[in-house]
Length: 191
Image (cartoon, rainbow, N blue to C red; front, side, top):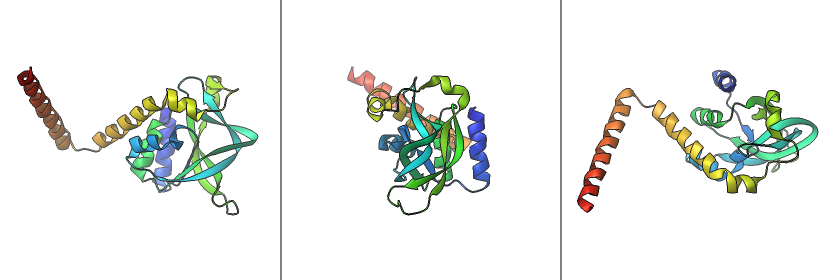
């Protein structure tokens, strides 16, 4: 399933059309973006019709499911560079499918809908949803945010490392080893 999300993202990349993405859960929080990108992207409050947000039982994440008459508030994220969009795709669970959508930004209610993509929960994983509960930002923040921020930071570091040349990776490893040796020497002197 993760391969399918990656394939969908690669297909969008080939067209050169990364475009905006609508988020409605953990990625509406600034701490997530700071850890993932090291910056805040352009965010606009938006609504998505025809869907409902539900809580994933394990992990406390939000999931989007189709629901006639439903309405979900979230953020439209704009201006992500291709490498940043790949990072977003990497942190999204394989329970989701990248799907075209259309949202209305709340700062322009008389304007046109904006075409975007979003992550919709896959039907084959519906049994993991808590159909009785909407996603709760306070519960997520208190219980799961620190772990999610750590995942975002790790994913960012991993992607940065993947773009390094072999020579740069070797230098980074040697530098780390020298730093650890200095710390060991300093620790022995202090004792």
